[in-house]
Image (tube, rainbow, N blue to C red):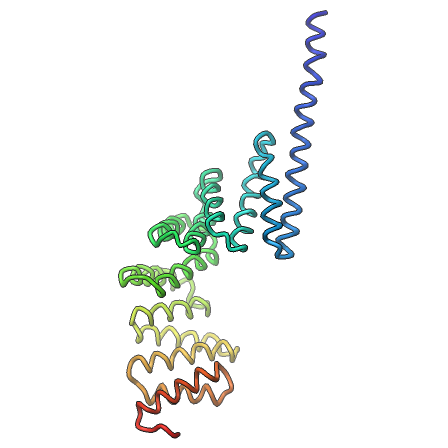
Length: 268
């Protein structure tokens, strides 16, 4: 009888534990769904709140696969809300919990750049992601952010490091107009205007079916010519762009006025 009573007492306790786990699992799923709905509405603060509620249940819910999924959503919501340090913290947590996956590394790189965590920190994530493979588009986004950082406040050595990374990516991205635009801009910043001009020419040909996209490359070709001291050619290019009605009219008029002083005329 004593043994039977023990089993009878133990059974309700076990049921309560599984019931609690089930309730927690339901709460996790509820908050996950709510967070995704808020993300879709671009209500990132509300999404963050929902995803954080979901993560509060993991102590006993033991939803390991769902936990990584929700942490990913939480980090993305934080990134989109401009909370880059929080996003980086959660991408680093994902790297610990779910492995050193290329996607997490690229996203950690982006968050580190945005959180101003230093060149070396961001670059280390990018280089590890490069070795891990993964999604090309996501990896390029990380590269673009590193490139913009190098262009705005990087040293000559940092510019050269990123130029080499662009050069490595070029064979697989040479049909990508956005890549060519970023790559050419980086080369201009690195004072490699001849190489930049060739990249912009390739972009101009690639975007022949889209006049507005093509105009961006034509404008940059003119800038390269100006930097190279080919003022007459640059003037002709800027003038043609202005007459086409494409590009920033105020900027084009300013460049044209400046270049006329360099080619011996200032009144057209």
